[in-house]
Image (cartoon, rainbow, N blue to C red; front, side):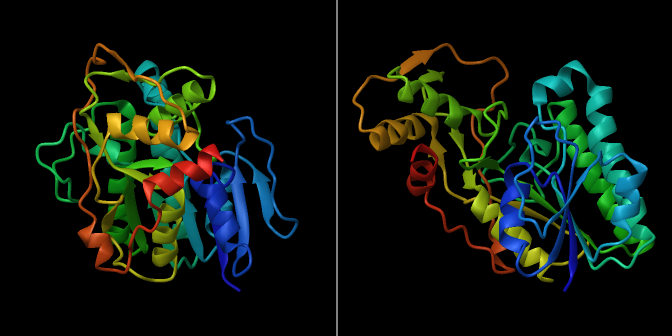
Length: 299
């Protein structure tokens, strides 16, 4: 049975990976519990409470067949206030794992990057060759992690591959994560019989991708699909307007109320959605419809 190390395995994507892989792999979860969540894991899944920057994390990286690195400092706001803390976690944490993996006999290192590395789109849909101009230290640190993965493949032959998810959502999403935050905010307000608030005219667009689809893409890579040294967008390739999202939430709750519009947020990206043809070429196909995905959250 192959061994897999999932960093950030208590988080949104990591926890679904544990669910998916626990029966067919020998799974170890590495998580520092910075989210405050206590682990709820099957007895046969190993749990190590530790930081990715630690010597223990480095040692563990050298002992596993597959590493899936989902752990990260994900708050854009926190990265803006403390860029050094952000880089310490996202850059040096990644580097620590890569260096540990280099001492082992690794089959694949899968790095979870972010569409935040693109910044303001210069064209749409966004493909992997789009210029990378991150607008926050968070985006810059995730991009730096990608470059280290690429360098470790080119310089040392370490089998690394990266994915750039767009706006991930699921019932396990963190409401403080700005990339799923609008969904959490809409649901929270409508559940409390208050109208969803949209900043702007509602015409902004995003690509909302279910965590289940992200996990399916990671599983393809864990099973050997895709090329080492490459990066793949993970989204739906479909465009969703923010006012459309708000209306879907209202429809699922069965509530009839007017959406509240306010002044646009300064610096907000107008449009962002993915070109996923490169991922589709290795077998990826998003399966979760946004309406059904939101139904799963709302219950």
